[in-house]
Amino acid sequence: MVFAVAIVLLVLGTLAFHFLSPWFFTPIASNWEMVDQTVNVTFWVTGIVFVVVNLFMAYSVFRFRHRKGNTAHYEPENKKLEWWLTIVTSVGIAAMLAPGLSVWAKFVTPPPTASVVEVLGQQWNWSYRLPGKDGALGATDPRLISLANPFGIDPKDPKGQDDVLIGNPELHLPVDHDVRMAMRSIDVNHQFAVPQFRMKMDLVAGMITSFWFKTTQVGSYDALCEQLCGLAHFAMRGRVVVEPDEQYQKWLAQQPTFAQVKEEVAGDVVAGKALYSVCSACHGDQAQGNRDLNAPKLNGQAGWYLARQLRNFKSGLRGASERDTNAKAMLPFAQTLADDTAIKNVVAYINSLPEVRPQQTVSGNPERGKAIYDNCVACHGIKGQGIWATNAPRLADMSDWYLRHQLQNFKDGIRGSKDDRLDFYGAQMASMARALRSQQAIDDVIDYLHNL
Image 1 (tube, one colour):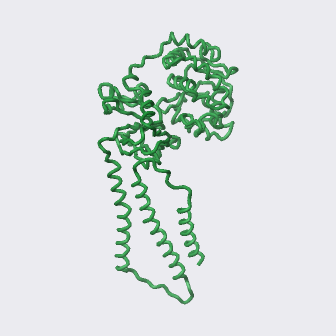
Image 2: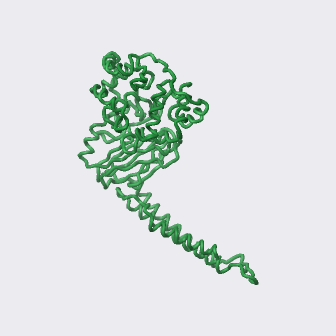
Image 3: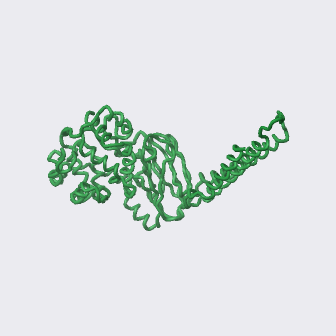
């Protein structure tokens, strides 16, 4: 009797949670209302089966409960019941599969007018490629992927010269526009998903998968990886911004083409030396850093990372938090670098300086730190050397006091805050830094890094 009541209460509680729950579909922002309708059909079919089966089980438990003097009736077969179960089950399965197959056929068949956007997935970052004026994407080859050519575009293919490269996880699209998403991965399986668009698709290395949708609502929507792609899977976030065509065209005009990227010249060390004179007062004449002035060591750090941080300081992305006083002190100095050429020049000079090993100032337990650093290896490398493909800077032989301070900033939300919606890499690091449970854990991992 108690068991039967418990089953009935379970059914009632499940129905109440479904109909009264505040968690359901996000407001739709694409043309795929059919996806919602298909999911609703599945809910109704499975919901009815759930209610009927469980109520029947509760009835059976009550009706055929043990009573003194009663004996069970054994019936090994009932062909009539088996036919009914087969027919009803088949109808239910068909009711769920047929709409889904119909929607899927439309989902992967774009209209001829749809423009193409390539989505490139890698641990743990999204980037995008758009066709130029010729309306076609150039050929790619994974063997051509490098720091200078992260998309692996074939330089011999003329169609790829005007391809527009979006080297960060934020994609802009015009509203009321048909878009075909062509997706590929350069490492493991990923899945690109935007809940408001009701779209998701796996990215499989060696394949190009695709679907299409129409943007219908202006807004900013999170892009997620919904395939378990590795340690930092949960932090692989991006954004799709849907905006009026005029704003979209302004954004598009600011993005570089493959030809422009190829034509970029390397930084000028001589010009960079003159620019660095402003920096030397804090960071030292050899870029060795100065703890008393809260200036970290720069020599030995990857040029791509230094350039990105300088651009972030110039744009105000770094130093956005009022609590990050040290970063705010850097803002006016970054403004002395007039343009991207100046940034490349000063970085070239820094990279030309002989490296100076910094003095250790943070003490911990390196053995415990080694176990903690196992969580960091996938991005920063087994020797803390940094890996450009995962957007992870060098950690070994850098200022340990600075690393300690920055890890605490990430833990405290001073860097990588959810309010800094453009700081994708900072947000990733903030998520990972929460694994450091205490100040002692931070000291331990930094002590281990110093020994690499």
